[in-house]
Length: 627
Image (cartoon, rainbow, N blue to C red; front, side, top):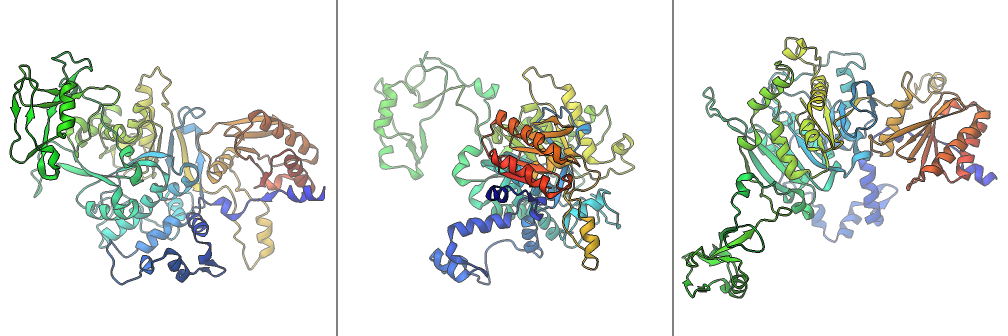
């Protein structure tokens, strides 16, 4: 019995349980698995690591190396590795279809939010589409205050006392323009990569101001070999005569996560009506409709077997033009002719051409490097449509066209999750909602200018505009197939768990003030969703509750987590609550280990607390924690 009691002792939650994923610790653990000999009590022995790698030049620390460097790059890299101590508070009252939707709208600074999503959404996002600040000198809403980003955000959003922090999209031009922008983008892209599936893809909008720097840091983060294309988007069709050069395009840089999955990252576009009309069947080919393509190719990389005189079925001979070769070798070409897959025109005397057959299930259009306004729309059109959605009010000046993002979704998302952590007016969320893709969007609650039409219309922040846009779109979409038109709203804030921060001059008072581990005035639902984040559970999993002995017991994710967060559990209630959890656990039979959480201060004494853990452990539930 003593052994069982020892094993079943309820563990208190640790400091790291109030943090997001610790990427540094994960990296060190992976290195220890690969190179255990390189680790000692003092840390990493780099001389041993060099020897194990077999080539000292691998870790060469020479003076000059190829790459982009700037003042602050080291700090930007470190901030991506620093865990967040924040959480996401649920806001059902601002949401649509809270109980059933899987879509997420998160209000907060995207750097902290990306950290908080690391455990729950690592390797789960198929496509990312972002439209970050272009760094024109007039829009830079993310300040150069990386030492404690969560506190910076909390001051900005009014959750802690304001100290005069300026946090606006209309700032003055500053001398360190490029370095600040790079330091802002670098950690966010590093964190975003972790969320992408192995065949995931990211699209990043940018203009001439930072396209070169964005390409350089993206090559470093995603790998130059994972670069797919620098798409050119025709953002306007009219000429600007007020500038030296009329700018009619922006860039959209596209990278995949894994070179080995590069071909899976980008899909073909659906066949357009114009493309489908090219397919005919003039000779009643049993294989169906087809179009003809050249049977020759450029001769530069051809083999000798691709140079010959081709003889048609009617005996006519066809010779190659200068600089050309046949598409197939002679044997393969003769087999294709016999099979009726080479077309010589209606009379049989025409230039040989290869039949390309239409297969509706497989055939599509290869995406082109230029996205013209005719298919991807323009900024002006996007603004006009958004204005119409808001009853003629221009609530957002620079929305991206939904058609542009829909094009990206068609070639990059399949039916996977779409993420946008510079959401703005939520054009990405609207495109995903209409295409049936699950979305996660993140937007800073940037204040609307008090003289703007948005503010006069009742919107105090950009995030408010985005949420209302989605409500309006959901109300206008007609769907008979059960499409998810809702979204859960979460807001970034500090953790529900009081972190140990003692006053060394008054330890007694510190102990008394930390007797309750949970923050006052937070709801059970607030704590439940932080448990999901910190345990790596999807924020959209179902949460069910049952009442036992007047206490709410929650099952999260079909039994992945159980929790009873009541402020008081008496000795007489312990067995009833424990048995209820055991029964429910048996009904759900989760495939993974179950974790059970209680409020530490709820137990009147250690005996009650130990008994609760002992009953659960004896019935196979071994992970029992107190908050």
